[in-house]
Image 1 (cartoon, each protein chain N blue to C red):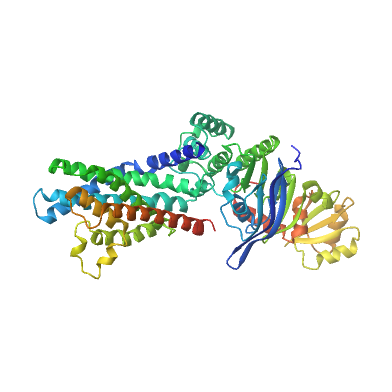
Image 2 (image 1 turned 120 degrees about the horizontal axis):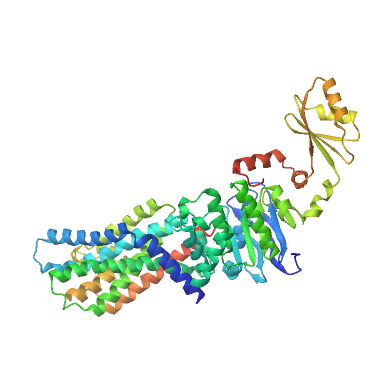
Length: 245
Length: 330
């Protein structure tokens, strides 16, 4: 019980201090709006392309939302030494980091629903398999957050975290099948797509929204889940190795 | 409260290296339950590193740590619920108010909402911060920040408290208040591990003191035992226009009953077990064309013992105090 009081308090503090701040709320809305508009105009097609774009826009909203916030909530607090308070609390590092990342996961999930709400006004969403979409959004949120966490605990400065994040985020836009099918990429680049967790999430979303997917859903879910665990474990290892010296 | 035989903290053969630098070099000590133990040394002596090792913020290279009977050597988290820490720098959340900061810190220890709010209000009162309870921490003065950081360290009423330079850099009144709170916590039975480079502070507060220099403990004893060698000694500090390097020797040959030592440029320390007569000394110096600008009686203190034991000049410690700023040792 005691550890959950701590967990909840850390999550609540982060929500109030970071995620629910007006600039972040507005960014969480404007960012998916801008991406949706940009790809919609770029595709040059009619409203029927909304569903084709939706998985990519949802994913990109989660990816940018989560990774940008982690750089602040973790790296900044480490820099200002307030993170030491958390390290000194009588809760395990696992619970502590789950509390620190839960806010980002929720933020990412909420961001994903912005393009869904926009799409609801433009297209018929009745054919979407929501039972697949919702757990996938959550899993992409977790995986992206843990990518952000891994980056945040590997650097010392907020600007380093932001710069380092872009090395992962921008290749993911082009390599993970968000807007261009992986099969349309040059053969020698294609293997790269499969080193990013987002690829598997997008594959499920494409399947659930448009009925087109490359791999079986079970395999996608398993690999995405494995990425989440591996990234979390690696981040904890990095914290122990770099921050408790 | 007298310390009892039960060991609240037991450390053996603690070693910590940072690359080539040995920050903590094979130190061992025991602190009894309810004891106020001082860790005294200059900046960079290894005081903060020792606290970091004991609280799990740093990994030890060798040695064992036992806190309240719990072996924390391989699992520093095991005793974290028993300890409170006041770090050397204020590290609360700038975006939260004083009240929110304390409530949040209490929540980290699993304290329920109503209780943590009550405790936060009580501590804000105790530290004279009630009027600033709803102000953001970022808007606090340095002294207020330090006091709130102290309050955050004891919000969960820990039986063992680590204080890292708690009065450094704060004003005289705040430092005095902090020292009173430390004494009160000790009176109520809290085991306190206090690091400081304010010798007077350690002398005033601590029951037992360890001198640490360059990562090594050079002496540990009860405060009254440490003071024994300087007890009953009479010390006079003479400020002179030109002391020269040979002046102490010249004076020693004329006044066999006294011991002379050049403290700083222009200051000579005269020490004796008998009362020191100022007149003959002044006449001796004036006859040699040396003007005495001040003759001040000095009450021998722990500082003298520290200088004797560690070989570190009192002047160096003084410079550190000045560098730290504020009135911590007033």
